[in-house]
Amino acid sequence: MNKLLSAGFMRLKKSKIFRILFLFMFGLGLYVPIGQYLNMKKYGYAMSLDSAFFMYVTFMSILIAVFCSLFIGTEYSDGTIRNKLIVGHSRTAIYLSNLIVCITAGILIAFAYMAACACAGFPLLGGFAMGARAALLFVLSAIVIDIAFTSLFTLTAMLIQNKAAQSVAAVIGAFVLLMGAAFLHSSLSSPEMVSDYIMDETGEVKQTDPIPNPSYISGTKREIYEFLMEFLPSGQDILLMNGDFPMTRAFSYDVLILFATTGAGIFAFRKKDIK
Image (cartoon, rainbow, N blue to C red; front, side, top):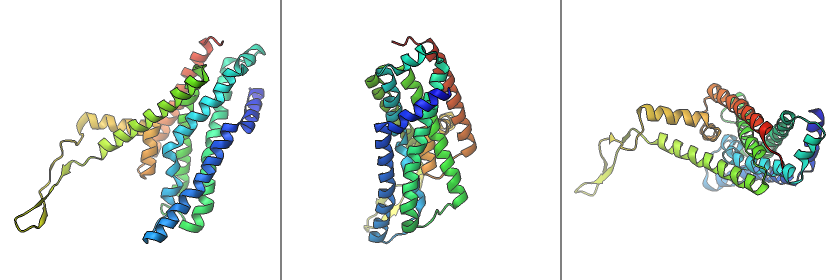
């Protein structure tokens, strides 16, 4: 296992896709707070570092999907996994080593954004409105969500040998998770009562009495939607961005996802015919 991890981290150090994503996130981490500062000066409203610092979480799943599929896909295309099996490494060790390396890469890519955002954001936007302790907990939450995403996309990458098919499946999966979470959030955000505006005979615009919203979701359906928002890592990203993150439950769900996908992945990989 130690030899596999050493080789994996050496590959990560030399990986072009890792460097590209790392530098992209670092650049984005500088761009976002600077852009918000310029808008703040232009339009005259106050902003804090909170929104800029956690803005990256909504598309981190796509970056993790791209990295996992290309990094692990290269091992299949180059015959590296087959060679690891030939020299006597177990399939469980191979799977876990790739998972650990991919998790590390995802955390480093996220930290690249946060480090750059902190360097540019603190002098321009000031500190966190939520406070340092809450910000630290939110950072930890974002990292745990990234780990859950990585376990999902490592599972996909380890079970699909074709590099192109891996990439397509992973990216589509990431978008499906994002769009699904956006749909759930939009549905849950619909108010229970709505009002309309009418113009009377004098030309004055008045608000009508509130009436039940036919789009409002209630009952068991709402409970299911709320559960899915908290369970899915993409839903957790949206809740984190909105400052409404159920930390204890979300952590439990992410740990469940990590162990379930890893267990299923190891089981399927041990039975997989490696060509």
